[in-house]
Length: 391
Ligand code: UD1
Image: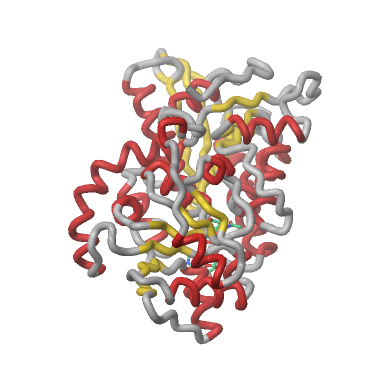
């Protein structure tokens, strides 16, 4: 492999390629772009050339372009327009289109984020073409191998050279799989950097607060007097009984339940002929800023999204997770999050029960400066088996 490292004027330059494609990845990319910009602006060496590749897994305005806009992300250098399809079709399109791009750019690092099909495509291609791979949000596990995301995470972690974890427990998960343990012959490096979505939240909350009144008014709800619901995981959307149970429980709640409907969920509801009723108010997917603003002001949040569980936690809003397990166990251990079970009654019970949360102890995901650590670690690719603390 020939790296792209060279010079730019008098300054040595390196090239990193971020591969993203789905909504949560755009959010994770934001702080990394900022940290790279800051590094370059301060004239630090080497100059970092950052190539952003959008696989096109998400393409609707509300889940793609709107986020690029709100997060002030650079326009992607490459748009692969892979779109939707079966896993085989989607993955094949991504990998085929990535091949030429990676060959042309020859990055010093390929960086993948989270656990989506775009993560899987980027990881497979980089590893097969022998480009160094770094995984942001490494080590998360739900212990449910049926989840596409769990499969994607495991593959990405086992192919990565640099594993950047959001928490100590994620690091432990990797060690249990033999990654980064003494004697690891692949000399992978595992570093606890904290959660980059926390960086994003801290960077954007002030702006989100400015759009809060307009968002509340437009959706016809009062701060503190509504629940916020999101559902999009295949384990819920692909099981009509489970989806109906969640919607029945939500529709019976005593306050309005705002339900921004994800494209996947919209397709399923239409196909099944389900129209949520009772307290549930369906709305279009929200921008990142509106979602933060409405999350912060919700009485409680009901969700199957990993990112939304963490955002609820950072915003100190109680969360009910519409799944049997979570990749974010600390939120449950600290009493801020409850797993809902799979009956109408257990979901209602999870919503109505309250727990005392000791927020002062609650910082398992770092201090909101993860992106700077990510940049430092990517600039230090030759050290082996270093483990750092997040805070
Ligand atoms: C993906 C991720 C999930 C992440 C989520 C965030 C995987 C396996 N899952 O799920 O981990 O939490 O993104 O949103 O990668 N669709 C549209 N418009 C779009 C995108 C998708 O209509 O812009 C529809 C299509 O019918 C598509 C379906 O949604 O078939 C599902 O899309 P998919 O690519 O599987 O990703 P998500 O379900 O969004």
